[in-house]
Length: 219
Image (cartoon, rainbow, N blue to C red):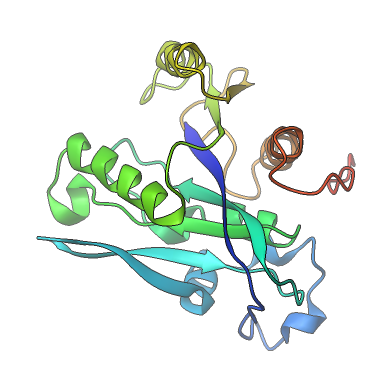
């Protein structure tokens, strides 16, 4: 299951580093999510959002390359891993995809058992800290989950959305029929672009990004 939240932070120009001998200008805006996660993390703006006994935790921020000023919408990604594994590089491609469409794409690192020896409680605490760093309060939330997910059961995703709505929050579940835990990533997953397209529509509906029509080809 993958969770994304919308918010707003100050925007400015961010220049992507070189990739395979190409300059940022040589890359089509709709293709930069195909850059390796390692390169995206290396070239991202890094902000310490929390200091823990296990070390500092970073936000990896990808700002639009356009000369946009003032407040811009942002989306925060937390890489899946069942509380056990996962690193920012694993799913930063999602943040890059939204960055190319005028949002500020952010991937947040958080403590997991394989790297820091922590429990799911620390994972949740870190996620809350990351969102507080980006914006106070709980913004609209959209999540995707496969119906055959054996790590985060689909029924629990449904329950999460129901409780969020009962609490007065905007929340939507994108269902991926027959998919497991990695339901819509990596970027080569056939569900990757359809899921992100619906996320764009969700964020447009809630005023978190300009409604400029679909940016995802249907072919």
